[in-house]
Length: 469
Image (cartoon, rainbow, N blue to C red; front, top):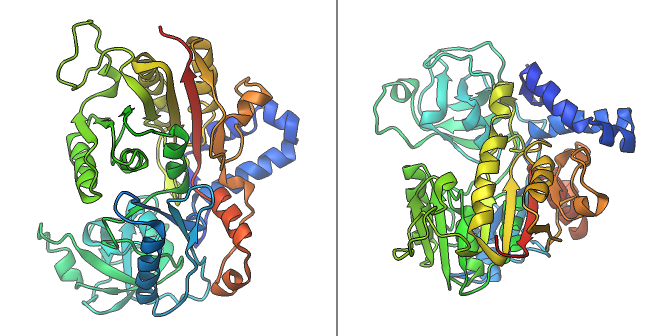
């Protein structure tokens, strides 16, 4: 059993990713050996959580310093007085960074075991407790109050309700069972709460379950960068084309001081409800969320738009965010992905449909930001090259703040164009362990650098519409 593996992918998917990261332009620039080393580092990094937990302060309701003080008190309670530094990001003033301690090598595995699904396991590695729906298996005589070791079934091979499992499983740490095995598998529908409260995880990271819910939004660092790059202004009309669960939508509204109109679309109704709930919780009134397919958001007939609901007339929005559906290959930690190559490559046509709609809905002089949480060349730099060729009225813009690295070679973009992109690529950081001792000795500048680099895989491009179409 490997405790810290590289991400497990189907061979066809790994080869596809490798071909992108070792394309002719990259190999020519770096050399084959260095390109291969970076790719292997990426696979390793994807299976581990980022070095920092990132939270965004809802500045609409409170100051960053006030929330930082409240959060410091909360972390003191969670970690029994252990002092965790809370850093305010210098380029993203509404973002706080909390270092993750680990992987911790001295966590002793217990005889009583709980097996959780891969998605639950990923969440536990980032500070979550184990909720009952995520539990797949538990030892035969497990009772409430037992100290248990929690493992992730990364390949989905464990049968629900099994009493033991000898397949591939990744150790996540120890916790206290809140329920007996019998209670967990009694199939009572109301059992949705915490099943195991993590007390000694391999990665020590704060839990944000109901922690300052009106003041904080748990959000990956690049996802917070996106809204700042969009740079929404009070009084504008802004479209978030693929908005669920609403992290960027609510961020946009807060940056506008809740003055103007933010239209949020998603085609899944329960996700739209989640956007509305988040807006209500964060006290934001400028958001209007609709259950609607973004590919159909352009009104084809020119009848006057009177109700403000989708579809919309051309050139209706000052700014548009297209945080596109993608293969998600930049998410961390992701210990295993069972997707086929067909699934991984299926997103490019959809992204182009959405981009075409966004380009039509944008006003002349307006800003369009395209982003994904994936690392593939096809969904990122290749999409930018396609957009610049397809829409001559769009110009690629410099981004502010520039937190990530420049774009990756391989799509035929110029050096200047690559510098105008932001690619967050965790393979630029060598693998390392962190502990409380290393935190005490670390300089703030070094920790900020690490937070910027060792985050999820992500991509951002910013365009401006030069003239009407």
